[in-house]
Structure formats: C-alpha cells, structure tokens
Image (tube, rainbow, N blue to C red; front, side, top):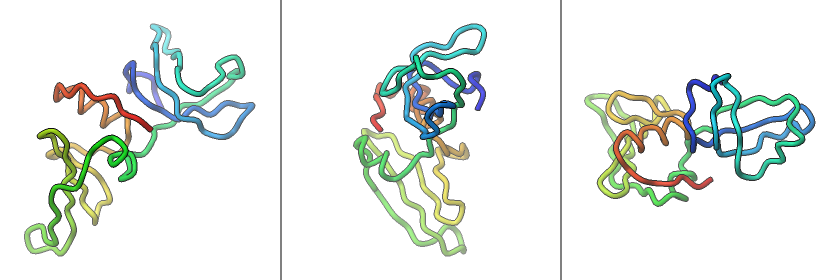
Length: 130
C-alpha cells in the first residue's frame, strides 16, 4: 500500500517484522518523505520494518459505526441479485451481492480508508471506530 493513498485520520493494518500479527492503527502524520506516524494500539519503538495494508470494509464495521440497513431488493434490472442500502444521517452506500462490493454511485469502496475519504468528501464529520 502506498502512503500517497492515505490521509491523516485513516485506519490501516500495520504489520511489523517483530510481530507478524496485523494491528489496526490510526495514521497521525504523513511526512514529506512518505513515512507515517501511528496512533492507536501499537508500540512504534518495535517497528523496525513494517508494512501497511488496507482494512476491508465489512458489515460489522458499518454496524459498529451506526450505519443500518435501510432497504433490500432482490433484483437489479432483470438480474436476480441482492442490493443492500446502508445509511446513516441521510448518507447511504449500496452493497451488491454478485460483486460483493460496496458502492457510492459508480465508485467502489473496498476498504475502510476509502470509506473515510468518501465521508470526508461528503462533509460527514464522523470518526470511524474499529
């Protein structure tokens, strides 16, 4: 994952060479050289070599953050499928079962940081909790 895809306040998984278990971390600073600083539950002193990975957006994350199912349908055009509309405060995204992806219009949202960017662009002041 490239740091140019991230913003301060984004959630990502961080894996260090010492501890191979990915941990969710909040980006607190992105430096000009591409390095990042983390907040959250990580000991940065033990991160000699680390990797960043995106956190997949899941139903559980949406529920934990106050989003709920507003509508479900069984067909899109002539194709049998399931579309679930998730919403909160007038904002909504769709989950399309055949693709197993979330959409905002034509924009695909696969990861938590992409969802955070979308919320910011839509001027929704919402802190995501993992």
